[in-house]
Length: 115
Image 1: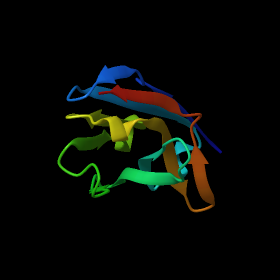
Image 2 (image 1 turned 135 degrees about the vertical axis):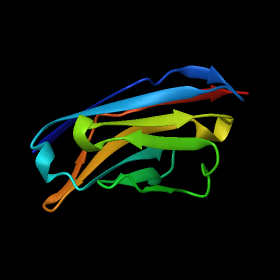
Image 3 (image 1 turned 30 degrees about the vertical axis):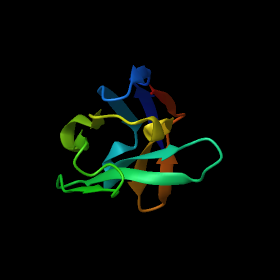
Image 4 (image 1 turned 90 degrees about the vertical axis):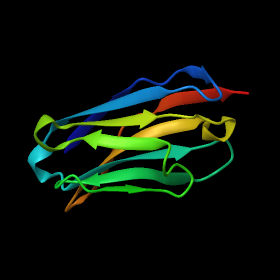
């Protein structure tokens, strides 16, 4: 089992920046990728960005060029740097850790972008 703790969510104005972090503990050797997902009010939980054990990132079209995922690997911590934030980025952001037996989720952190 992997435990995930997110931090960094906040209220920010449109055009601003915010950085999220997620620390993994427990059976971290089983993790083969980590990522960030988000759920906006009334919508499904969607992928934002993922990063493989080798450090290869993948982004949704909605955030490509504005968000950067980094970290993971030996530090077992993954970061999400969010720039040029838009009101439509408002959501609860969840950290995910992917293992051969399934996906582990954090409790989520609220990001609110005001116009």
